[in-house]
Length: 110
Image (cartoon, rainbow, N blue to C red; front, side, top):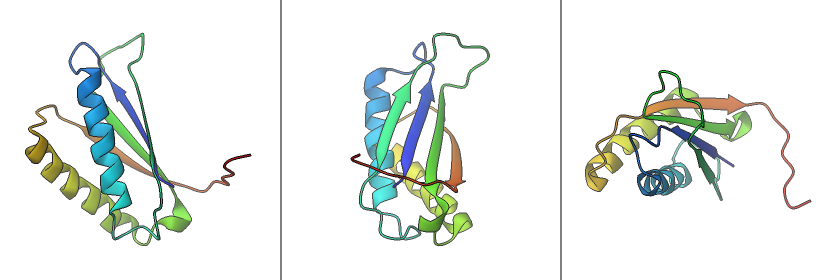
C-alpha cells in the first residue's frame, strides 16, 4: 500500500495542481512493475503554515519494504513515469521526489 505525502508551497502551486499531481502519482504507483501486487494507494497533500526556504513541491512515497521487488528499479520507474506524466499534463513545477521503503506493520479497517 503506497502512501504518497505531498508538501507544497501554496504561494507557488495551487491546490488544484497538487490534486492533479496526487492522482497522477497514485496511478503511477498502482501501475508499477516493481511492486508486488499494489491494489490501492493513498495520496495526501499539505501546505505548511510556516515555510522557511521551502521547495515548491516535495513528494514522499512511503511503501512497505516487502512490497518492493527492486528499490532502485522502482525509484527509476517512478522518476521516469513522473517525467512523462509532467509532459502529458503540462505540469511546469519542479518536484523533489523521495522514496521511503518502510519496515512497518499495517492494519486497516479496524
